[in-house]
Image (tube, rainbow, N blue to C red):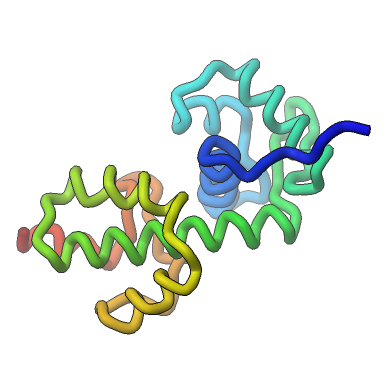
Length: 150
């Protein structure tokens, strides 16, 4: 029997971007789009999507794209909430936009749910997260005004 896929940073990034891409007025994320955002070869994306499908994180059809299952969506939303929380916190500290995003991207994979909830209580964090995430700018749309002030 094949071993279940471990929720590594790499796996979480796939789930996060499948979620974000599927939110752009369609149901599925295309292999080429995932490849573009993760900066990996389309063949690597196909291989990962097949693995994620075996573990029921996605529903994948070749040439049609991937859609998250409820299990995959739960992981993706959790990662995005961690990212947004950390990015808000860092922007509030005055960390410049590019660096706040990059650091939040790294911390989203190690921050616990408990710490995330505690941080959310101390910052002006939108309850609409992660639906507020702007993929074209790679951060929450509510951060646009806050970043401009830094």
